[in-house]
Image (cartoon, rainbow, N blue to C red; front, side):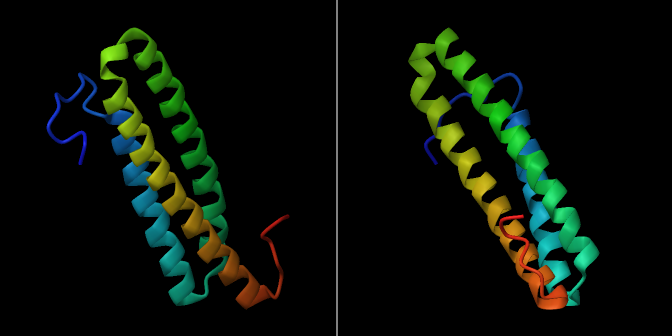
Amino acid sequence: MGLAGHEIPADGYAEFRHIHTDVVKMLNRALDSFARLDVEAALRVFADDEDIDRAYNELVRNCIKRIEAQPDDAENIINLIWAARALERIGDHAKNISEYVIYQVKGKDVRHA
């Protein structure tokens, strides 16, 4: 909400939009794997989570560079980081759903493997 009234950067929040799109797909895959008890789909969510984590870390690095270049815009950039962090956490929860699917079907706890 804090970003809504401010100028959109030239990239149109491309990194954020990419994370958002991937998290939505990941969550859908996790929920589908749960509904179907599909271990293969659940395992694909693990790879999705790694991609989301990499994209989030890249977004944070780029935001830090933007803060250094545009200190007056720091509050908006930090709001973007917080929003991206929320999306990344949704991805983590989708991964948790997939871990439970694997446990339910295989009886194998993969949470800390």
